[in-house]
Image (tube, rainbow, N blue to C red):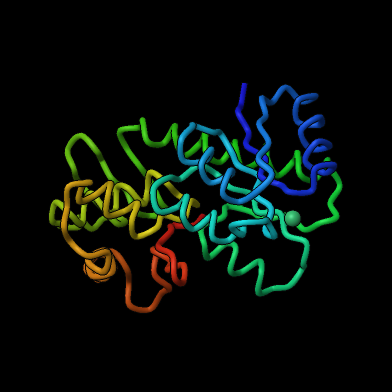
Length: 226
Ligand code: CA
């Protein structure tokens, strides 16, 4: 049973979403403000978080940003305003998807299912011994990286960074998350070391005449998208 955290200050809407999700066999918890939502998000494990944008105490964008500093829990942002700016900045802050109020509950359920499926696919690929992204292949046991026929020589860090990105295709990874995964929690290095290594990696895996395989998500981090 998937556990979903609903962070929404409109109590009637929160209750409505909760009942619909429970009807679909999800386990739910509701938080009515940003601070309570952040605390629950950080202290418990959730399969996904539905996060309203306009919240008392701490807005949804800030809650999202703070969750992403330490966790990759899938987040769907609920926004009342259908402006491009909100959508873009929501995704920039690390949300995986967004839905605009008022929405049909079927649409929310469909997006939630699709997000949970994406995460499951990513988790499965983490278990595979060979990872593929377009014509890029990583053989985990031999640590061989190839693009097409060409074998690419990577340093240990570059390899770990590429592996992390390829194990999380379509999931935006913040600099903090990458730093923790590739360099470890005890590290004292600055987050901009991630940018430096992404540049090294791009120089080795990308072809000059094409868009980079590693996309920059402005202000947040990096992703390899299918
Ligand atoms: Ca609200």
